[in-house]
Image 1 (cartoon, rainbow, N blue to C red):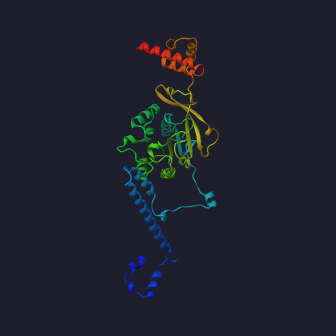
Image 2: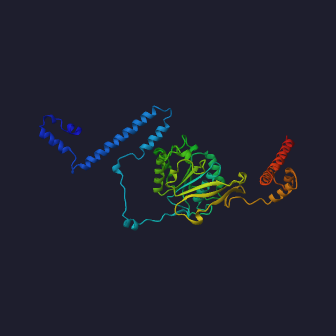
Image 3: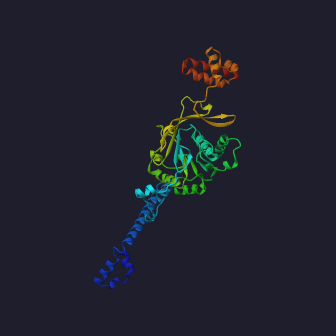
Amino acid sequence: MKHLFVDHPDIGSLSVPQYLGTLAASAATTKNVVEYAKLIVKLAERRKLSIILQDATEDVSKVDDAADVIARLSRELHGFGSCSSIALKSYALLDLMQLNLPPRDWVLADLLKIGDLMMVYAARGIGKTWLVLELGICLSLGRGFLKWQPPRPFRVFHICGEMHVDTIRERIKSLLPPNSPEDAESRFRVLSATAQERGIPDLSTREGQAAVERELGDAEVVVLDNLSTLFRTKENEADDWQAAQEWLIRLRSQGRTVILVHHAGKNGGQRGTSRREDVLDLVWSLEADPDSDKSEGAQFTIKFKKNRGLTGDNVRDLPVRLASENGILRWSLGGMAPPDPRLSEVLTLHKKGLSLRDISEATKVPLSTVQRWTKKHSSSTDPSHETDSLESETVGQDQSTS
């Protein structure tokens, strides 16, 4: 009716039959129903956009920090546009069977394929960043990672939202094998939040995603370390993860393999909503050995919590260990380090009643190591007696050096 009066300013001079004829000509018919439907869709989109902006305006007036409102507004506007512009394609079963689909190549043989989405999670201090740095370095060099082999070198893009850039550099330096070729090192790129004037934008927003995609270039493997710092969403809210999930799927469609790093929750699973795991192909949990000693390096077991298409030995628990060899950090399979050959002698002398200081001098083992070995051994025999012995020895040491 609105358009009718605008298009016919002289409608007042029409007779009743003429007016009804004009109105009927403007109504939806089988001839103009498509255009009429498009008009309805456009008006509905305008109304939806108006409501989103109105809600955001009201929310801004209620909060001191508009960051949350901006983040939510960005997620709501993400992908907003005409529904009619979205074209989907389906296949009949016969067509699907005859479709020429090239096989996806392995990134790590029998573990990870191009386009796969993977998560590594663990409690703080277990060694998850060390592990994914080693994984990235191995892929960029085209050399084996633990028990898996890459078919060729890959271009890796590591995004760190937590550690200072100099810490990341030192860790990479300690993991790089000597005389690594320069072209291999150029295949490993790092984006650190601390090296940016304003940090890395929230990757659950379109703005943050676009900023990262401009830097990705031809990267084939993307590491996101970690979810808590890079995606500023409410961890327990499944709906808040939707925009991030859509981005991961888009990276997958670009042929990129994505590795997410996350913290473990109090229950031992990955922290926050379980919806994060819905689209993932591979999920690793790193669980520390309760008997491990951090002074001997990182020691934990890789446990497969989700694996698509993997069976048998490829999904068995895998104990691993990171320790220094001649100043270079090396990963090895099997978890706990083999016992020091001097351990037996230390325990024998301790059983004979020698003081810890005398044992240290006799075996050339540092006093702090003697204390740790004997304390660990005594905890499974007579803890109360051994604790008293160690405390008296420690006090004696303090008195002698004061």
